[in-house]
Structure formats: C-alpha cells, structure tokens
Length: 139
Ligand code: DAT
Ligand code: MG
Image (cartoon, rainbow, N blue to C red; front, top):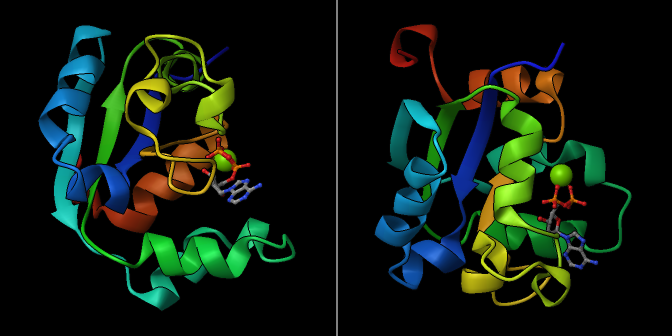
C-alpha cells in the first residue's frame, strides 16, 4: 500500500527567484498538508550525503555545489499516495520535458536547477525527512 508521506525541498534557484510563496501555494492547493517546514541551508557535506546515491553520476559535483549554494525550504508533506502524487505535481526532472502546469514547468530553469525535490519512494521519504528534521519537529 502506498504511504502518505513525502519529503520536498524548494531548491536554491526557486528560493532566490522569489517563488517560495507560489510553490507552497500550489502544494497546498493540490491537497498536501504540511507536517514540518523550515528555511535552511545545506553545507557541502550535507548535500554530498543527501545525494550520495548519485555520487557516480557525472553531474554529482555540480549538483552538490548548486544545492549548497543558498537557502532552501525543506518540508514534510502528507497526503494519500503522497510520493507518486507529488512527483506528478512537480513534473519531469528536466523542465523542458515537464507537463504544462507542473511546478518544474513553471519555475525550473534547467535539468540541474529544477526548483524542487520530491522523494522517489516511501522508504526514501522517511530517510529524507529524518535527514532534515528531528522527530519533535514533525507534526
Ligand atoms: P529527480 O530530482 O527528478 O528525482 P534525479 O533523482 O534523477 O531526479 O536527480 C537528482 C537531481 O540531480 C535532479 O533533480 C537534478 C540533478 N540532475 C539529474 N540529472 C541531471 C543531468 N542530466 N544534468 C544535471 N543535473 C542533473
Ligand atoms: Mg530523485
């Protein structure tokens, strides 16, 4: 059975671009509840650890540098079928391939600076939430 929790980040490009409010609005309109949320910034070490699964990919260095380049919004979201529904809401990794109306189509610059993160499985949603939030910060 699909879980009801996912984890998201509004990435440095979208925060710098002034899109926090618009993106949070779209997330709320789509029926997600906020279980935890903060404005924070990843150190280079944090970004390396968070994206460790991509460490062999050619874009890893660029990804780590970008994700630690400025503030982000981290949040834990709740909805039925959260992981899959949220991936639909954000659209394809490459905004050029993202469907109309998706968050990445609207706000992402390119495949690297793509505005938002969304967990890819229930298991990773738990791991990623715990990476950013203490248990007492998740409501
Ligand atoms: P997603 O964020 O859609 O789950 P992913 O897990 O494959 O995508 O990759 C993680 C992030 O790495 C992605 O959001 C942006 C970056 N990335 C992925 N593919 C890339 C590429 N071809 N060039 C540059 N950055 C890339
Ligand atoms: Mg991914």
